[in-house]
Length: 104
Image 1 (spheres, rainbow, N blue to C red):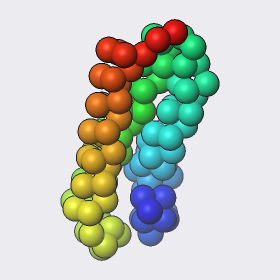
Image 2 (cartoon, rainbow, N blue to C red):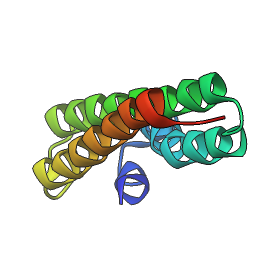
Image 3 (cartoon, helix red, strand yellow):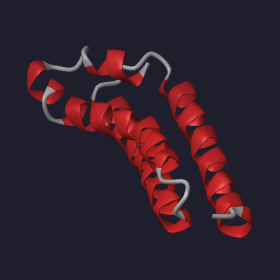
Image 4 (tube, helix red, strand yellow):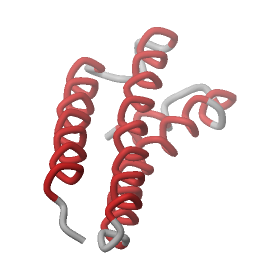
């Protein structure tokens, strides 16, 4: 969803701000997968989950910026922001779970 809206940005922003949003949004699941691949090492797992959580927060920032600068690009930014915030909270809670309960 966030990827498609970046393609509506002016050409010069598609390669700047749009690229930043695409990379941060793609980083969320990528870091979860990479961390899970290292789940045997608790500290590595937590590190990659933290990267994923931070990428969620970064994505929200980029969406807010696009919504402010180019309001016509994202149809309903509040819905997108809400979904990222919900995902961010779930990742954060999972990080806490891994910190407290994960056995290696």
